[in-house]
Length: 154
Image 1 (tube, rainbow, N blue to C red):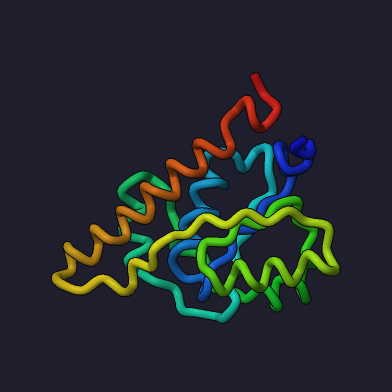
Image 2: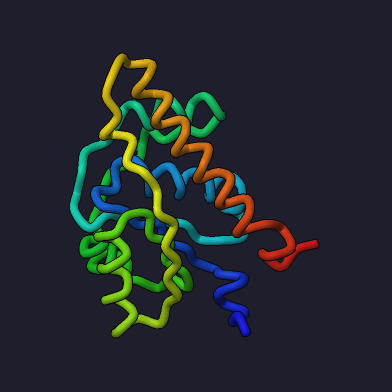
């Protein structure tokens, strides 16, 4: 049986390797669709740098990510604590870190394997396409996982 907290989380953390592409995208999408019902944050195992390609592809769907600043899971724990019902990990290193956190924190962990678009080669447009694919995949996963009925609404 799935726990109510897992089905209807009140606080969700999206985690990836560097908190510069995948987890900020996922957090921004989640915030856009469900931010009035769920506290949303993102963090990485390591600290990356803000990626302007994220801003470009998120702007295309009307979500502004320009003010996001990469942070680590460790920094988040020091600043705010890790009071999350659910951690969605998007990269293997983040998944291992989140599983370690379950030893001392009461949280569920889900792994959504997500490709790293920073590895894409080619022209600027080809690289942006890789970011768009990740954005669209995350949006679809978030819509499937956090539907209105799953979030406890009609």
